Amino acid sequence: MTGGPLVVLVGPMGSGKSTVGALLAERLGVAYRDTDADIVAAQGREISDIFVDEGEPHFRELERQAVATAVAEHTGVLALGGGAVLDPGTRALLAGLPVAYLSMDVEEAVRRVGLGAARPLLAVNPRRQWRELMEARRPLYTEVARVVVATDERTPEEVAQAILDALELKDV
Image (tube, rainbow, N blue to C red):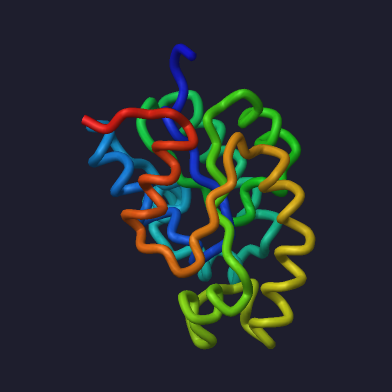
């Protein structure tokens, strides 16, 4: 493959995309980029504030644009926000790219994300809402993924190695 990210990470909030992405980038000797961080930098405010002030549809449009830009520009490891796969155009952009879906079960999600974290989509009854989000998103994550790596009870290093092995990438 010429151009485009070396690895794209997708998965729910708290699955370890940021931590694993930074590790992968270091091991592969490439740059790491996170589309959520791109949005925060461009907007000058947190994602939770964008949700509150302008709503989810506005945020999803910002996210769609951020993903399209990052996929076009970035050649290292790229992590996408948990809901980025909701957009059909984003899923089409990811077709053929080396996408790894970081999966986890609800108990692991609650342990990692916590019940009081600033996650706008989990504000009320986080367990139920996480399950509902995953019922909607799991098929989309699976659709775009070349590999699925379970993160439950694994260290970030173990997850990074599983991705390297599954995508047959060599670290530097």
